[in-house]
Length: 226
Image (cartoon, rainbow, N blue to C red; front, side, top):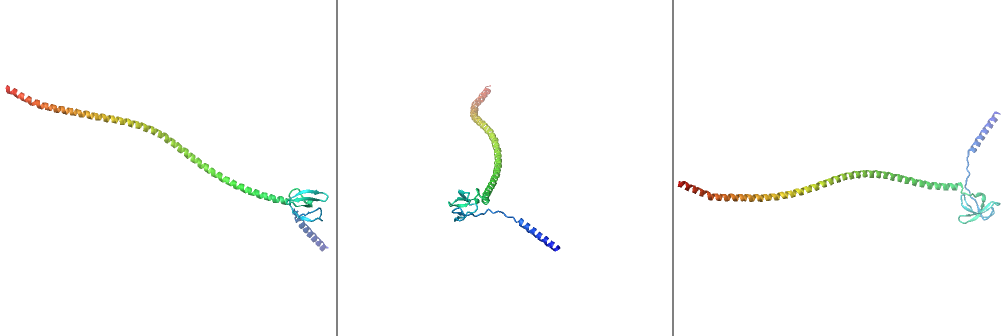
């Protein structure tokens, strides 16, 4: 009896484990599907095409009694397919592929935008550096301009002083020429005076030379007569 009970417990345990294993196996419904396009309504008609999941087609006619629809493919081929396999929007797989393509495109756009952002940031940094350099150059130019203005004002004053000095120099030159002319005139006048004085002295000497002997001679005669 105990052996039977043990076997029963073992069998129950195995059953529970096997049931649990089966329950844990997960399955997903596949949306991959291949349907048949026929020349007419029903399986007795010839198959002309086997469209796969996601194939685009235009609905021309729908027969609800037979459950078939007349459709036309993008290449112009027409035929009948079961209506229950048709949906009014792309299946998830097709949408997923489209979404993945769009995501890839968007990813490339994002990469491009990131590159543009990096370029803009780099350009911004360059512009900031250029702006800083320009600001420094502007300050240096303003300082130099102030210095030039100071020099210019000093130069104007110097030019005015030079003009005054030139005028004074011209006046001095005129005065010097006048003085030189006067000096020459005085020299001529002095020479004439000295010449006249010399001539007078000479004349007086001659006269004295003529008169003095006569005076001596007369004086002698006077003394002799006495």
